[in-house]
Structures are given as C-alpha cells and as structure tokens.
Length: 194
Image: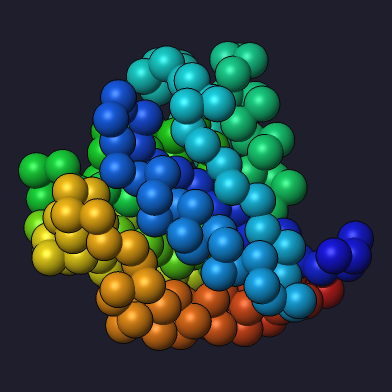
C-alpha cells in the first residue's frame, strides 16, 4: 500500500444490535484487500454516532456545527470512493445510513460509490434508493453491486454456511471492485485536474 493509492471507504450501514451487516462488510473488505490498485478501510457507523440531522442549513450550503458530524465529514473526505454495505428495512436503506449521508455533501462530490446489499431481495430496493441519493450528492454510482438474497442471507446467518458456499457472490464482488477501481481512478484524475 502506497500513499498514492486511491482510498476506498467500506461503510457498514447498520448499527443495530445483532446486525448481520458485519459479515458482508468483513467479507467484502477481505476480498478488496487482495487488490493492489486501491487501499480499503472498513468504516463502522457505530464509530460515528450522529444525531438526527438538525442543522439550520444543509451541508451543501455551509459548514455544520456538530462536532461528531465534522469528524464524520473529515473521514469521508479522506476517501476517493465508497462501498456501502446496506440492509433493507421496509424496502429502503437504514435510517442511520441515510442520516449519515445527510450530514455531509462536498465530501461526496465526484466520487464513485458501489453497494453490497443484503436481505429479502438482496436489498435491491434499498440500493436503488441509495443510487438516487448518490446522484443528488454528485456521486457516480457504479453499475455492478453485490446482492445477498434471502437464501444466501439465511444460509450464512442461521445455517452455518459461508460466503464460499455461494461463489456467485465473489463473482459479483469482483465486478463491483473492478467498477470501483476504474471509476475511482478516472474521477480522481479529473478532480485533481480542476
């Protein structure tokens, strides 16, 4: 790992007790760390306890006063791209994840974002909503994602199976990471040229 390598944050988007999200977050992080073209850091939202967004103005229009949010923004600013590991609650992403997104803005601009989703339909609906939010934040959502559906989810969580029992997930992870690598390099070069 060199200082010049683009940095990718892998954000664990659930904070609830007994969450499953640690398993896919650690799994994608282990796969990602095998790459030599990017550096990866796992970021747990539990380590960034943010209040519900309550600033007088949006971060797009000025600095926030909340110190926890300022630390969160500094963490986001250190990355050249993101991978979000998201559950699906009631056909959408977790409230804590959406709240974390709402506490920043300029730290997202012109960076790629990819998704690892888990739940009933592999969190496809949560990922779809997050793609729309990402566009509003001026991010570039990549095409490929990992969708851990109910069969895989229950197999890993309750039946003693591992991610290795579902090789299609590793194939999806490779496609996601390849997309993130390409877009990260292209957008980092473009951002630095401005």
